[in-house]
Structure formats: structure tokens, C-alpha cells
Image (tube, rainbow, N blue to C red; front, side, top):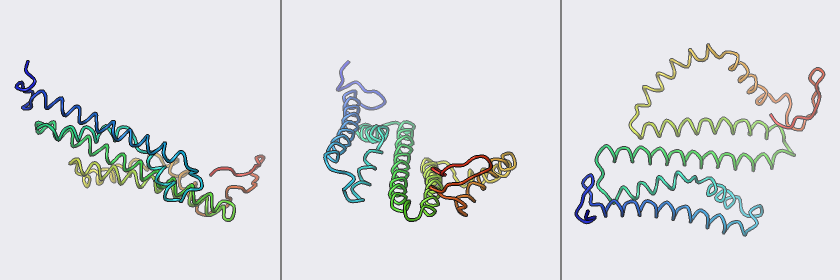
Length: 214
């Protein structure tokens, strides 16, 4: 079999080999860059570094391997002429991987800011720090919901009809999980009304102690 004349799905065998090499090379290059950057910043005192630099380090560490693989697959697919179905599959996989990585970055940014803010406010205003921490969980939930909807829309799924269906189904689900929703709203009431905050000493019936986490 001649690798220069034999073809598979319209591409010469050497082109498939080149595509594989490009894909693996790009993925390994990105992974190597991440490791080198992580080692470079490790020699500095990260705690004394500017906030933006610590945030950047955190985002670098949150970059996942599947993202490198997805970028490598995309780079390799540019070398060969893929059939429409295969090209569509690669596009969907890469799109989902990129959106998932963006969600990890966004969630990491929220968590980083949240941890920094609560450290600053915990001693002087524990109530505000407690509320902000709870709102951070809500922000993460909203972020992931938006990313999922955008990703589905970009791969060709009609999100509007899905949202309409979820709205109708949500009513039935809400009726089925009334106790869970009651507990959820009760927890939100504790966070927003702040009858107690982290650091308070409280007594509930025969139980007593210091609040460490809400």
C-alpha cells in the first residue's frame, strides 16, 4: 500500500498521518505551555502577587486536558477534507468542549473573587460575607445554565422550544418536590434575612455552638 497514492475517505494516507501528528502536537504543546506557566508562577510568592496575577494563575490551573484534546482535534481536522457528517461531529465535540472550558473558567473566576471578598469582609462584616457567599452559588448556577443553553444553541438544538417544555414540566416538578423547595426557600431566607451569621454563638433547643458554615 502506497501512503502517497492510497486514499481513505478522499484523503491520502499521509494526510491522515499528518492530521494525527498535528492534532497530537497541538494538544501536547498546549499541555506543555500550561505546565511551564504553572512552574514559572510557582517560584513567586503568589500570596503577595497582585490580584489579577493570582486570578490568572487560578484560571491556568483550571484549564482541563479535554480542552487541549479538543483544540488538537480541531487543528488536525483542518489538514484533511472530512465528510460532512464527520465534520459536523468534530464541530459539535469541539464546540461543547470549548463551552465547557469557558464554564470552568467562569466558575473559577467567581470562586476566586468570592474567596477574596469573604476573606476581606469576614472579620469586619460577617453578615455581608455570608450573603455574598450564598449569592456566589447562585451566580455559578446561572453561569452553568447560560453556558449549557448557549452550547446547545450553537450545536443546532432549538433552545426556545426546550425552554418552553421545561417551563411546563417545571410546574409538575415543583408540585412533586414541594418539601425540597420549601427547604430551599427557607435556606435563602436565612441567608438574606441573616438571623445569624458565621461566627455567631447560637442555641437551638438543647443544641448550642458557633456557626462555622452556612
